[in-house]
Image 1 (tube, rainbow, N blue to C red):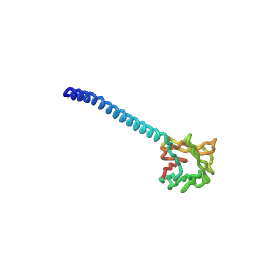
Image 2 (cartoon, helix red, strand yellow):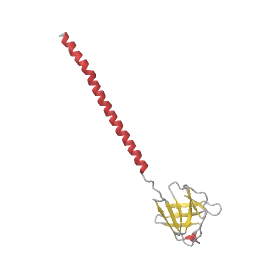
Image 3 (cartoon, rainbow, N blue to C red):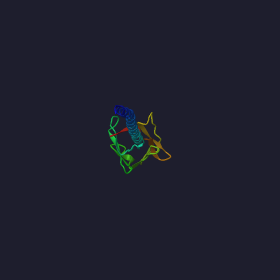
Length: 159
C-alpha cells in the first residue's frame, strides 16, 4: 500500500511540472498574441494618422497690419471671390483659385497695368504672389505652413 501511494505521488509529481509547463506555454502564447495584435493596431493607427490629408484653406481674412500705409485686408471667400478692404479696391472684381495637387494659388484681378513685379527671398512660410503674363494672374506656392502672402510688396498675414 505504501509503495502504491509513493508511486501515485511520484506520478502526480511528474505530471504536475508538465501540466504547469503547458499552462505557462499557453499563457505566454496568448500574451504574445495579444501584444502582437496591440502592436499592429498601434502601427496601423499611426500610419492612418500620417496619411490623412491636411485640409488646406485660404478662406478667411489676410491682413496687412499697417506701418508704411493704413491697415488693409484681402478677404478670400469660399466661392472663389476675393475682396480688398482698406486698399487695392481698384482691383475689384477679383477671384482666386487653389490647386491642391500643385499647391499653386492663382489670383486674377481687374485694372492691373500688367507689369511684372519683383519678389525678394521668400519661402514656404512667406509666399510672394508674382504676376504671370501667360495666365494674366498672380501666382504663388501656398501650403498649410504659409504664414504670409506678399502682394505687390505688402505682406498680408492670416487674421
